[in-house]
Image 1 (cartoon, rainbow, N blue to C red):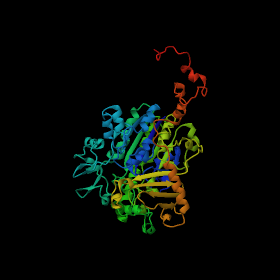
Image 2 (cartoon, rainbow, N blue to C red):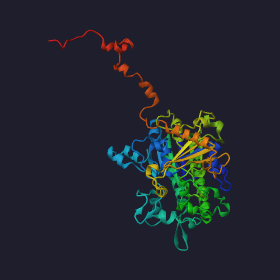
Image 3 (cartoon, one colour):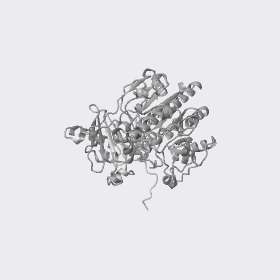
Image 4 (cartoon, rainbow, N blue to C red):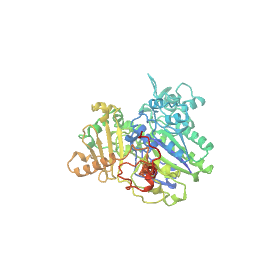
Length: 546
C-alpha cells in the first residue's frame, strides 16, 4: 500500500463542506471523507508552521524534538518519517513545502555534507525530495526571505513570465490599472492574481505530484505539501470572484474577551496582525479570497483523485488530508494562528484506508482526541512495522479506522514557544520564559504561561466559542488543579530515551550475568551453576610462588 499524505497550509478545520461550512463547497474533500474517517477533534502540537510540521514529521512533541519556532533547526539525528518508513521498506518523498531549516552546525560537526545521501536527508527533514518549494519568495531591501532556489519561479520563467521573481510580480499580484497590485496588501485580495490559473501554485504542485505518481515504484509515502490557502490571500480567476462579502461569517469574538485579558492574549490582540483582522473591510476582502484558495485546492484534489482512479491506484493508496494549523481570520480579535483557540489549534483530518479492514468505517466521523503526532505512528503501522514507541510519541489511528475502540488518551497537548516574537519583547520576557502550554480534555481547555502569569481556562461545553476565561473567577479552582495535574503527568513522560526500546531493555535484563559479570556473590551458589562454570576448576599454573 502507498500513502498520499497531503497537507494544506493554514486550512481551518471548519472551512470544508463536510465540516458544515455554510457556503464553501468542497466535493473532493467530501469524496475522501466518504471513503474514510473524518476525525473531528484533531489538534496540532504547536500552532505555528515550522514547529507543527516537525511534530508531524517526527511523531514527537515540540519540546521533545526542540524545533519550536520557524527557522529553529531540527537537530541532526532526530528520527523522522523517512527513517521509520524506510526501515519498513517504504520510500518517503517530499513534494512541496516543509518549512524545515537544516541543522548546519550539527551536520558540520559530524562531517555530513548536503550533497551526500545521508546529508541530503538530514537537510530535508528525512525526506527524499521530488521537489521542494516553501512558497514565500518575498524580497526586501536586504534580499530574499528564502535564499534557496525556487523551482516554482523557474517554472514561471519557462512559461514566459518575466523578471527575476515572477512569483512576486504575477502569482502573488493582481493588476490595478497598469500597476502591480501586490497580494501582500489586503486591499488587493479581491483582485485576480495575474497568472494563468493552470500556472498558479496549487495546480503546479498538483502536476508535479502526478509526475511523481506516474514514475513511482511502490510502496511509497508521498508528502504533498501545498503552500495554500496560507497568506498572501490572492487567487487567480475564476476563484477570486466565487465568493463575496455577503458570504463572510460574522467574526466569533466578544467584548468580554477584551476585559482584563490574560497578558499574553492581550499582547497578541494588540499586534499588527490582530489589528488588521479587527477591521471588517479586511475580513470582507480576505475571507472570500481564502475561500477561493480552498476551492482551488479542492478542485486540484479532484485532479489527483481522478488520476489515481484512472491509473488503477486508488485501491492501493491510503489518502490523508490535513493542515499544519488553522487561521483566526478575525475570530477572538486575532489573525493568523499562534494561540490555542479552536480556529488556530484544531485541524481537519481525513483518512481513507482502501483496505478491507476499514470497510465498516467508511463515511463516518470519529470524536476521539487526536494529536498530529499520531500520523507518524499510523503510517509506520500501515507500512507493516511495529511502532517504536520509545521514539514516536503519537499513537496509531488504524484501530479507529478498523472500527475498534482502543484504550485512548484523555487529553491532548499543544505547546508554543513565542520567544522570537514581538509579544515576548513587549511583555519583557526572557526567551526561556516565553512559552505556552495547552491541555484539553474534551471539555476544559487550560492554557499555562511560563513567566509567572496566571492560567487561562475555557469550558467548551458551556462556552463553545471560548469567549469566557473562567480562570478570572474563583469557581474553577478544582478544574484548574486537575488540568495542571494532567500537564504534570505529560511533563513526566519518557521522551529522550530514544536509543533503547522497552523490549530491548527487557532483553538486556540479566544479560551481563550470562556474559560472566557476577558481582556481589559469596560462594557462587546464589546463581545457576552454568553461570559460574568458566570460573571453576583446577588451577593450571602458579605465578605467585618462587
